[in-house]
Amino acid sequence: MNYLNGVVSDDEYIRKLDAAVMRGRLNKEWRLEYMTIEQRDMEHERVGRERGREEGIRTVVDLCKSLGGSSVDAVEKIVATMGFSQAEADRLVSKYW
Image (cartoon, rainbow, N blue to C red; front, side, top):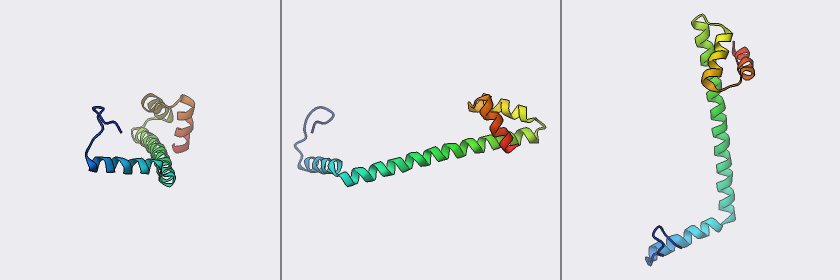
């Protein structure tokens, strides 16, 4: 295998390590397990982002309420700061207002 400088190492330990890595890459069970874990992690990230958005919307709604603002103010803030469309912000604010 080529390395950063394009030279194959003549060190026995490096050659053994390289062979082990190649066996691991070719192992179908390990690849399936890696892909399963990767897929699970991506799903957890998606759920985390959704929870974060929900929490952010609740925070904006609560702040607007506590400061005497209206649901219209909350919608405007959510559109301006969180990147939601007007329709989506309206729907979400009405859910938590």
